Image 1 (spheres, rainbow, N blue to C red):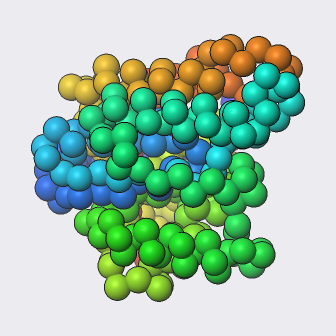
Image 2: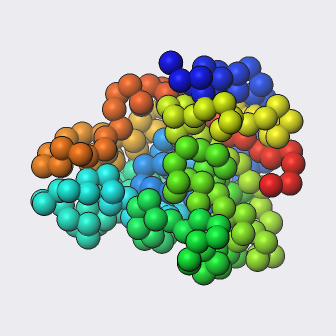
Length: 251
C-alpha cells in the first residue's frame, strides 16, 4: 500500500472540528477539473448554501484529457459535456448553476510558476477573486499529486499577491489519498487540520459526484485509455467528513 495513503489517516487524528460555518462565510472554490468541487468540498458547499452564504466555483481546466482518444467526444464536445455536468453537480449542491466560471485552460496544461502564461493566468485569477470577494477560498492542497492541482494552488498564491481581497484559504485533498508520498504530506507545523461534518448532506454530495457521469460511468465507451473515478478511488471520499488544511506558515 502506498505510504502516503497510510499517513493520510494521521490527518484525521490531528483534525479539529469546524462546526461554525460562519467562520467560512462566502466562498470561492477553485476546482482544477469539473468534479474536484464535489469530491473535495461538496458537503461543505451544500451546508454553506443552506445557511445562506454565496458560493462561486471556478473550474480551471477544461477536463478534456479524461478521454483523449474518443472519436465520439472530441475535445470541444467533451469540454461542453463536462461543463454541463458541472452545472448539474452545482445544482445538487444548491449552488446557482450560473455561479461559476470556466477558465478553460487545457487539461494537464494549467500554467505553473515559471512556465509561459503563468503571470497572465494569475492576473485573471486575481480579477476573479476581486470580483467575487469571498471570505474564504477553497483551493487544492499545494502538494496534491496532480500537476493541474499544484498549478491551481500556485496561481492562487500569485493572484493573492495582486489583489486587495485577502480571504481565508482552506486547502482540500483529492489525489493525496490515492497517490501521495511522504513528501507530499503536510508537515506537523505546516498546517492546521480542520474537519467539517457532512453526515447530514451526504446524499446531496453523492448526487453531485454522480452528476459527473463521464467520469464515474462508461458513458463514453470508445476510448480504452480513458480515465474514470473507480469505486476503489471513490471509497476515499466515502466518509461523513471533509478535511481542510489551513497554513500556519507563509507559503
